[in-house]
Amino acid sequence: MDDIVRFALYVVPQGALGVFGETWLAWDMARGVARPVPAAAPEGWEAITAEPRRYGFHATVKPPFRLAERRDVAELTEAVERLCVNAVPFDCDGLRLASLDGFVALVPEGEIAALDRFAARVVAELDGFRRPAGEEEIARRRKAGLTARQEDYLLRWGYPYVMEEFQAHFTLTGRLGPEREAVMAHLEARLAGVPLRPLRVESLCLVGEQAAGGFRLIHRYALSG
Image (cartoon, rainbow, N blue to C red; front, side, top):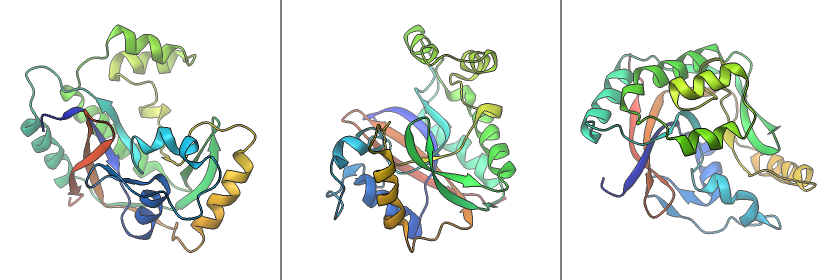
């Protein structure tokens, strides 16, 4: 685990949806390696997907963090396992393709309260493992123009978009310009036949950012409460 520089907690789909995301981003999170460029990729695919490819196909539950001093990976994995043993699987109504702040993602729709509660719990219960954000990171986050509540969350939790500011999403592109509509149409066609309803959340993944680049799966924990 010496090659891991940051950790995060993700929802990583399996089955047909997982295959779609892994193929589209051309990133094998299980092994932490690149995959071949997808067949019939649209023009500019590499630039379009460069940013999300680093993270793999996922929805963030606890954003990437560096391990706190006097904490180790064994303690972190034990804590994640304890949390998941006492967490119950749940469903969201489904997913839809959407444009969020200029990038394209699959977002949950319908009843998402269970997902929001689960994410808040993960952020809070595992926060003791997070090294506090440095001044440079805080300054970088502030450039986005934060609300008062987002500023408070940045200082309290190390990230502005948690708790009530959380919006689950499975990112598919970086920020796009005029090509956004064409990319969304392409993705709609690629998603044909991929089951998007319901979205079953029955596991939580501990992942790590490799020193060489890209996130890889460390362990998938079943929600078995």
